[in-house]
Structures are given as C-alpha cells and as structure tokens.
Amino acid sequence: MLQSFLVYFIICGFSLMIFVYQLIRGTMNKISFLSYILFSVYIASLVSLTFFPFPYQKELIEIMIEDNLGTIHNFIPFKTIFGSLELGLTSFIKQIIGNVLLFLPLGFILPILFSFHQLRKVIYIGFLVSLSIELIQFGLGLIIGYNYRSFDVDDLITNTVGTFIGVIIYQYSKHVLDQYNLTLRVKKGQK
View 1 (cartoon, rainbow, N blue to C red):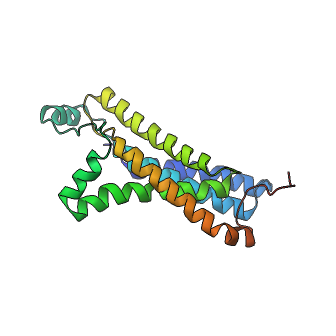
View 2 (view 1 turned 180 degrees about the horizontal axis):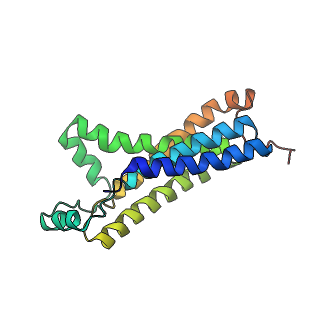
C-alpha cells in the first residue's frame, strides 16, 4: 500500500522549499512564511488522512474484491451520523467528531491567509473541498474495482459544519489576530 507518510513528506517538503526560497528572496515575511507552512502541513494531513494508505498491489485489491471488503457508499443524509450513534460513543467520536475537527482548521486559516470579505465564501470553499474529496474517493473506487474509500454525504455535512465552526472561531478571535498583526489579509485602504 502507498503510505500516507510518504505523501505527507512530499507535500510538506515541496512547500517548504518554495516558501524558504521566497523567504530568502525577501518576497515573504516571517509571519507569512509560518502561516503558509502551517497551511501546507494542514493540507498534507488532509490528503494523507482522506486518501491514504492507498492499495496499489493487484493481489491485495483482488483479495479485497473477492472477500467483499469494500465499504458502501452513502447517499442518504444523516444515515452514517445516526448509525454511528447506535454503534456507541467511540464510533461517534471517530466518525462524526473526527470529520468536524478535520475541516475546522480550514474555516479558521483561510480567512487569515486570504482576503474574504464574506465569510460564507469560506464555508462554500470548505463544502467544495469536501465534495472534491468525496468525488475523488468515489472515482478511485471505480478505478480500482472496490470502494476502498467510500462517498458519504454525511461527510459533506460534518466537514462543512467543521468549516463553519472554524469560521466562528476566526470571527471571535479576529480582533486578537488583527491586534498582533497575524492576518495576511489586505486591510481597507491598502494595496
């Protein structure tokens, strides 16, 4: 299986090279450097958690198909949410709370890095990122012949809720971020 740590280090290493180069050239300040590195670590973690480890060995894929080990797609809203409640607290925390927490940083860090005058755009971006992940997982299942990772409409719901909570946390901490000049947004009247 293609392991997540390899992908994680490739994404982080490539980002680090780009941002160190910009820092050395003077086109990026230290706050921007740190912010973009943290965002790169988040993106690498998101990719690693949602797509990997990825099975590419033909024998393993054949065994998974033969033993009917693929997960099932869910197109019914709240089915996974209620199902995880029935399975107990551990399942609920892993499935539901985990998905909310996975997208919370996106809702918090996007307004810091980019100029969003309407924070609902951040929530929309969170939804689109989540939808992209779900569609890629669905497509990968079609390509390899079984649902290694499944499309789940409840993931869209919980990920979007996570983005929304991140935006709320950003809203409540915005004055502190601005006070210490920790946002990279362009302030009104500046270019």
